[in-house]
Image (tube, rainbow, N blue to C red):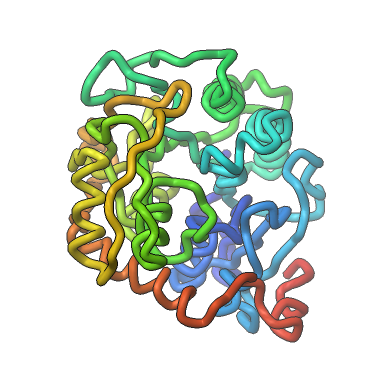
Length: 348
């Protein structure tokens, strides 16, 4: 029986967040702590930082385990729920070590699902809109199977996440060897906000950092390709609702903002908001770069009562402020001070 809601009144639920030191993961950890949960962050620090967790350094209900999800999770970690956000999500990061990216998606998800089966824990998989590839259907619905190049430079991430979804639903059907797991899968569309890394390599961080540095804004191809941008707080709300809803949706759920913008429109918004001498510069389009991307979020509305509330015009200013603060303080490394970092280690 799933024990997510049937915990003892004398203790908080124990929630493991894999990839919890990253952009999305650290924001999720803070939300869960604010909601009264006990949080275990598991991260190998490939793209996460202890600086992202500084606000939780002295929180007694928070602990950090530095470990790669490609290794089995210690069985002693008793958990009621697991969020799997472990995997580099920006193309430069996941293409730098494509084999590790694929293993993180497949072996990491396998280990976490095994852990959930052993503890009767609920599981949320952070999948991605990249499972749709360069879509031939627009907007993208969850019943669309996608158009993915399985041997291209992006395949380690695209196909890795598709394989992870397969594992999730096999475990949900009780085919994992340890009993059925209560699985929920979120297909996350482009998300932005404070705590993105300046070297993230995704379009929002690239354009903002270039504008702040008075450098040319790099637009790949014509700039007419489209994306949909979801502010981080809206995304976290969607993930939390997906974990807590009963019963679980019977398939993946798109989480993203259905507002659709061309890359040129995004660049123009950044130029309007940043005092800069930058101008647009065009570069060749990367291999397998999707031309159109917009989620159909009707399933999220139906099952979760969720729809994003932050328009791009409202989410960009605090994101720009975040990057401007990094520039102002010249923070080459966002790791927390040693005294704070040491407080984060160990398992509660």
